[in-house]
Image 1 (cartoon, rainbow, N blue to C red):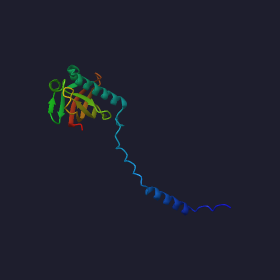
Image 2 (cartoon, one colour):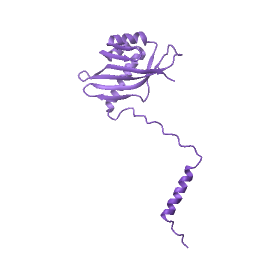
Image 3 (tube, one colour):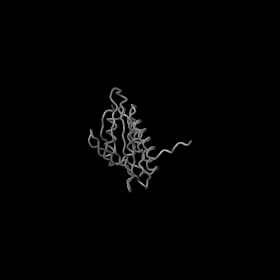
Image 4 (cartoon, rainbow, N blue to C red):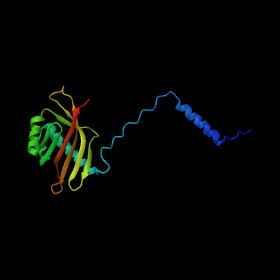
Length: 177
């Protein structure tokens, strides 16, 4: 003898009761999804521009970390403006390079926080670089690691195929917890 087919209403009721029973289960709720972190390269930034600015950042801070002031100064525009939330403003490549010599060389190194770099095209000029960096104090290991955000404006000279850093905002400095 054949079983009678279940009506659509009966099937729906069984499914509803099963779902209700599962929902009443004692299990812990699923953990919240991690926050969405934007990709390192914004969709509006061409790969070659992103790589070019990342290379400039690496060259600048390699010179900074090794105290290669000649190389450091070569990446700066003569009229650079550097704004720091604790130190104020420094104008000109000579003044900025001298400040690095007096306050950074042998005392502080900088690292870019992986995944924090963003690069945006600045038509008919160059690019804007945004990121987070950390500062270590090899001469004073007890001093906490510092962290801050930065925005840098790079100008590209199409004739010479060179990049120069023209403006820097370095802010939100704090100890890493």
